[in-house]
Length: 186
Image (cartoon, rainbow, N blue to C red; front, side, top):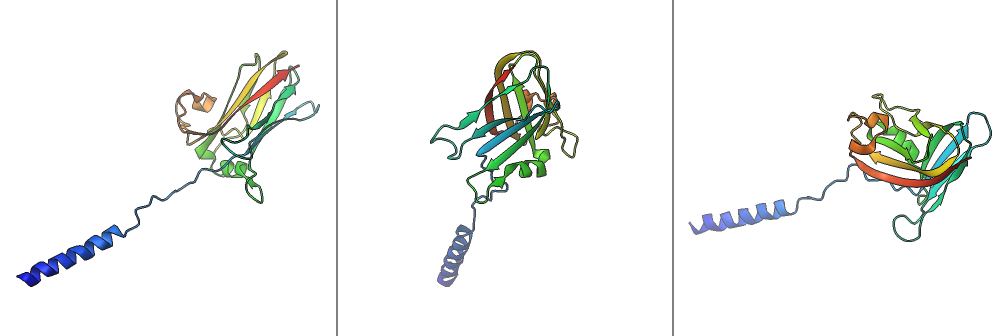
């Protein structure tokens, strides 16, 4: 009977050792990308010259304040907009725009402004027909100034009510980047 107890103890110790040595570390499936730079190129359909809005924060959150450059738009003008996202901490510089486009069904940009008469509409869709926002159309109205906010959400509820119309209110998901640009319409 002593041998049976001794064997049970050894067997239990071996099992305990095997199970405690297993790898329980979580696996990160899709690590969040670092976005250091957002450029929004606005090209007027009348050919009068591209306006580039830029956000740049090379040291990431904390540290130095980001550099944000707003712009001046013409009144009563239509612009095509194209967003570029970069990670300039990588060498060579990594295009986050390419990743957003590749994973379009998991991303959506949201645009809002307090500038009277300015409208922003989507000019690109994911494979399910929902908006992405890397390409847009902006129409300006009369002269004024204010803020244009651009937010990129990861895994928004694109099928939720009004989300496909650009309403972030019930989009859910996580914010990858949010930038406020000062804009003047002249």
